[in-house]
Image 1 (tube, one colour):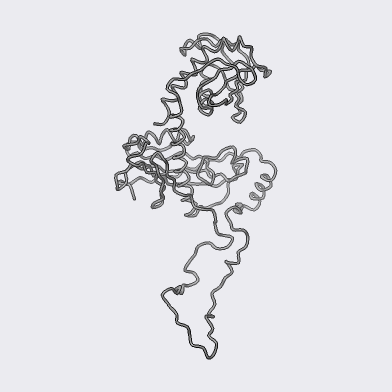
Image 2 (cartoon, rainbow, N blue to C red; image 1 turned 30 degrees about the vertical axis):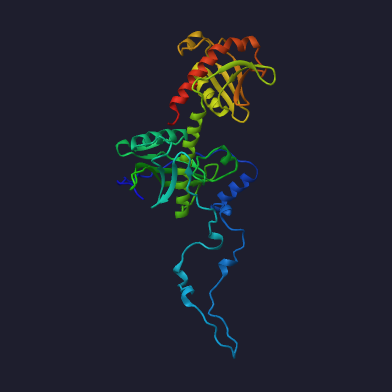
Amino acid sequence: MSFSYKFRTAAFAAVSVAVLSSLSGCATVREYWQRYTEDIDKSAREPTGYYEHAEVKKTSKGLVIPDGMVDPVSDTSLDIPDLPVNASDGPVGEEMDIRPPMAPLRSELGLQSQWTGGEAFIWFDVAGSHGVNDEASAWELLQKVLAKLNVAVGKTAPDAYDLTTVAADFNEFGSPYNVSDYGNSALRYRQIYHIRVGRGNDGRIGIATSLIGSMTMLASGYMMKDILDPIELQRFGMGFSNHIIHALEQSHNEKTQLPDVLTVTLEQDKNGQTCLAVDAPYDTTWKVVKQMLPKYHWDITEQSASKGSFKVNISDDSEDVYHEQGVDYFALDEDDYVVRLALEGRRTMITFFDEKDKALKDSLVERLYSGFSQALSKEFALYRSESIK
């Protein structure tokens, strides 16, 4: 299935690579060994190490009939035709890539991926709950998804619903490269994708993705010589498309879980410390607080998603900062603080600590409650309105 119009080929841009500092343990050994040999470690792509099948040779010996016996009746319809030795030039033995292909994905939102003609397609079912009914809405949706994936857009042709991404780093599954990939010393693929929106022969809206440029690097950023084979091109294209579907599902779920009116109450957490109880999912609250704090000159100096904490410095405590945002004064002095989030049941608790990691007095938390809860409500409303439809 193909779109009803042609697309323009995008040029591959040269990308400079910044070499990162260092790795640790076995990752370091593997890193330097690959640098020394200039060969990529492909052990994860190979069979167990037994390659007897690669040594099998065809012989001329057939079924031997002992003397005095009648030749058995045979059916030649299932005979394997003779082929020349060079009839198949595919990889064998240790050159085989045993990783499974990236499977097509089907979503309950009425989305499905498909590999056709060298491109990965995302099709929007007509009766789906994705809310996409035309090219314009699919194009708008694509822009938001790429922004959530931190994949920047380079060359674009909005009238043709056609774009080329700026080079970004991905792992071998077509997902944006992250801290976990770096910690595991996974290969980095700096890639550029060509993406277009259109309709299929059956009238469905679709998003087509193709990989047009790729450079393979070690985790540190060291460039390696590597040419992707057709199977890998399919893996990346399908992986990236499937990741777009996952991002759409996540955004849809976040929106449906957000309450129409946010409730923020002043309570005590399990440790008996006065805190703000937010009637919203933890992950969403984390994102909202992260984008809210700098707007009130609460500069984030350190953060830890695993610990659910932000270290902040209040650089301007003047009341005008808060009144300009339309909220009450937070009433905290310019200083360093720690803001912690914790999940209790279906609610998220926000607790405040001073620079020595001592919980703020109840009177201080009660004083900042009014303005902070107003700011949270405003930010949640903004987050909801910007969520993918």
